[in-house]
Amino acid sequence: MDLPDHQTKIVCTIGPVSSPESKLKELILAGLNVARINFSHGDIEQHRNTIKNIRKAASDLNSIVNIMADLPGPRIRVGNMGDEPVTLRTGDRVYLTTDEIEGNSKIIPVNYSKLYESISPNSHVYLNDGFIQLLCRKVTEKGVECDVMVGGILSSHKGVNLPGSKLFIDSITKKDLEFMDFALSEGIHTFSLSFIEKADDIKKAREFAASRGKNVYLIAKIERESAVQNIDSIIEESDAIMLARGDLGVEVPIEGVPILQKVIIHKANLVGKPVITATHMLESMIENNRPTRAEVTDVANAILDGTDAVMLSGETTIGKYPVESVRMMTKIAERTEKWRNETGWGLDILTKGIDKIATSIRAKYGEGDKCSLVGEMDSMAMSISDVIALQVNEAIQKLDLDYVITPTVTGRTPRHISRFKPQRWIFALSSHRDICEQLTLSYGVYPICIENEKPDWEYRTTEILKNMGISSCGDLVVLTRGTKSETGRGTNMLKIFQIV
Image (cartoon, rainbow, N blue to C red; front, side):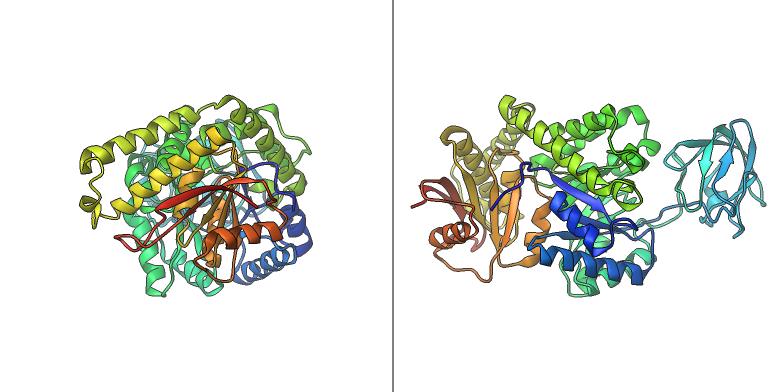
């Protein structure tokens, strides 16, 4: 069995050019790990058919592909623009209205009923990811009078951003919950939440799923200034993070986005939460068969920052070269990972951060005082998982192991090992299909679904890997596993051995 040459995961947004089953197979073979369905576009029947096609393509190729339902959130959008696209010219005067009309170059409908209450004179309005910039001059009962400060081409349903303005809308909308209900009924368990502002927004979505008897994997999209301000509590409450740089670069000063990317990725890495870096990664490949040098550098830098996954949007939904875009991602990842492995670039910063966590745990509970950890907000399980991950990472570096084997029920241990961006594959075996699919987001984790769990993990796992053509006699591996402990759960030991 041939393993991928790269460990960074690839998320592809599925749209008109990529939804046919045959095209999905090409994308999977090229490197797709997670298929994103954007509920901001399309209807329920289209989404249902896309879900069916993704599953059929993955099944035919014997691949594990996670389906991520991207909920639209309280996205403010331009309405129908009539004879589109419309050109707005710098210096022109335009009006924004909440009336349901067809827009033109003089008047633009906006689907936000509280527009007149949120906006005020001298405030900025950004359209289409900030490429078009307006300045509010006057707010009347009939509309918002604006000057076009930076013009451009505008079409229907493009995004509207009101940075610094108070928005009178819930982060998790009624429409979001309707979409979530549908996706849950289709067996989807991974959701990305748009325009969240605080940890309670994530709790609301989780509680809704729980009311339907479902456990879900929630990805918090960071695209508002308030989310940046609440990043620590959001990371704690979420299962993963997405850096949605398009809207984020409008909500905060755009020159600060690269620094925020590094800071947020590092924070998530420290606690073992996967990170997706998204928006405009290979944007020029929507039209061209090669990316710009800046785009290639952007993808590489995201990987060096410590991202687990990189995401394609328009490139795989409406682009002319969807498969080529994925292949380009894999090439960039392969070259970048090889260089990082040779140089250790950035990994020392992560290790120092983990060491600080270990030091704080020891300071709080005392060296070797296991009993004091019991019942402390799952601290015992977390601290043991941290120690196991540290030891596995050290073993990889000092013993030149061939790979890591991690039987898992929750996915916690492989994720905690993954944050060190190890040079070796982490084979995560689980009888829980949803956990295997969720692990497709974690760097260097290769999930393997098994039928059931047995106590003799050493023999069982090595036999599975042998049958898959992954392992062979003489391979030096590390196996993590759980045994009965004071808490009755969690991985709490590891073993290094040679396969015979």
